[in-house]
Image (cartoon, one colour):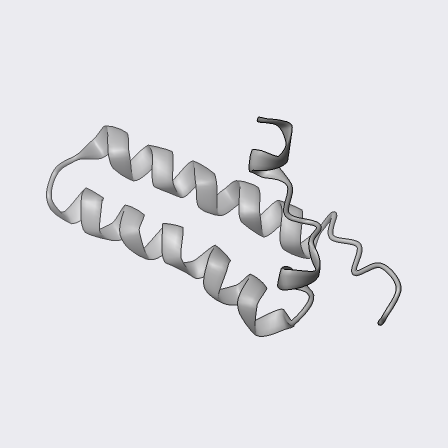
Length: 65
């Protein structure tokens, strides 16, 4: 369960993958908000905020391979 929220993996080293993984929850939050599902919109927006913080504020790319 601890690894469920781990974003510091080699998969996310390229910038484009981090951007896509961050934009998708925000886009889906917009879809949910447009359909009136406020709770789901807030959940996906919170996921987007977490990913934005994890990928662009606290992200450590680590050593290059």
